[in-house]
Image (cartoon, rainbow, N blue to C red):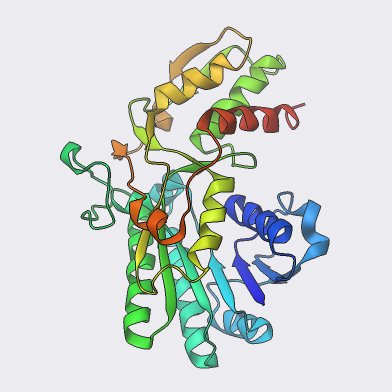
Length: 320
């Protein structure tokens, strides 16, 4: 069986590669990367799969790569995934996320191949969620509050449209916040952890800069999340359907910060940084994973406390 991961050099993509290589040795694994992609997340497994250069925004390039691989399963994880960047460059986020996916779908249609496809959608699509709407079901209205979220709504609905129009075997997963080792330091848990470790190693003053600490998020360990991605394409999810993948429990960003600080031995002062505040922020994302759990048997196995400790240890190995 040939499996393709787009975005294999990224955070979730590299963990999915680890999961597949460890648990499914019969798989012939392929990844696609951009010429400027950093590869530190996959250096330890580069010799165990075939990595092919591809710009998903180039339709001809995508078609030739898919013709070369002709995969049985595609995990489409490549995206501009940092919400603040989408405010600074909305066109780039829309182009990368929506047009990149259209190019994949069109190439599949033209090549007349029939892979199972998982598209990594996002809980950010739900956007403005009201207090009487939690935990969030897949049927909840989508009220996106950032260009990134709009791009994910586009990906999500394109997945539905190509299933309905062409019968493509597309599973849409709406992943809620996921974190863990290798998460970029622009994302909140990793950002706080790196700041704490830098203070531990006396590389900076004992001050942590923060944005909105009141937002509430449903966090899942990335290693549980990618196991869910694999299970989404294991035959028990219905093509064209959408599934939340989440823990079903949320924490305020303040609680996340307090937990991380409690796992360190340094005295730290907290200061608000206006540059870390967004034009609009989603107040609460608390998901309901019942549909996905019933279909696949998936459930999170790694505690959030362990995830945060692992993130701190990750940065302790990298901050000099």
